[in-house]
Image (cartoon, rainbow, N blue to C red; front, side, top):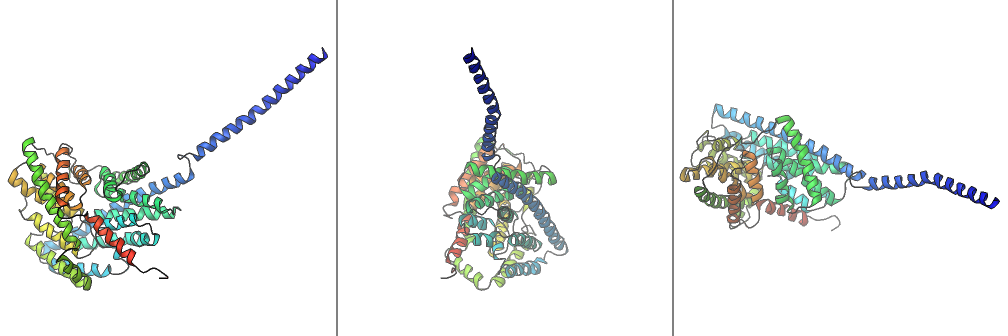
Length: 466
């Protein structure tokens, strides 16, 4: 009996110990689970710093793109007011402005020259921090916007979309560094995301922003890239939508093509856009044959050379009835909407002004001016083939594809700019034809060729201690 009582007492004591241990075991399991969640990518502090950078960067890129657009439009409006007094005024104003910009960009602001997309590609390729700082520093971003606005004030045939890509990349790069990201690979993703947000906010084309970043800037697609790109584009797009509303850059273009005539238009626009775009990309590089003599002349006397380019642009402006200045947005929109006719030579006039403005070495992009050239080319083909605005749209997409050799970007951006999906297959087919034909004249995409020059210049610079 005594032994039985003892056994029962021992059992009760064991149960009590087990009950006391249960809360401790539960706490241990809960702590382990919380630790696992804390280490999960969704809750990791590093990931939240990255999200903070992307969210704030996307917002700032959107705001910068909108401010840049308004400032550019205001500056060009003032230039148009001057034209109201006399169409001959650009013969004085444009060369003076070109010379001033060439002088201002001959020193520390040299990285602000040109489109800005080659600088972004070069910064992605070379992971040297000092090189990236030289191309993407805050002062460069601000200078890019200010000097491009001055170019608009002087009537240069330039766009703001390439510069917006440059500014977006610089903003995101600076925010990433400010929040403690120093790994070159991580900063490359910030640069890529900023560039995508820049093109999306500039045109209000979010899908084109992602496609452009993948096709033109990175050339690869990875899961981690997709999340970064989409996050930055979404926040930049939300800012643009909140301030400017939901709009299409050229308005809605209702156009279609009958099947038989459509394939003829695809071949005609694709071949003309490829030849024209490829020739344009080759000429602005000043790298082959007689073009090297022009490059040498620009290197010897950059300010005088820029002034001469300004005089030539103004002369084309007089000959074209002042149609070639600025981005060419108004002319392209009118041709796409069918609200205004244009001389058959508009595309050629605009092409010449684009080349001279780029040769001058001043800040400014080629995206919008290329769209204007393509719309003029499409309008000329439409008078021969018929087909209305559909052929104009194909011509615009084809020339952009030929000039940049990025058919997917050219197709997507053309459809988003015009809010037109009914011509998706003809547009894609035209861009593929244009890209193939363009490679016959320009073996390497123009942005990458220009970026390679920046990389080679960097590698040839003397290093400390050598």
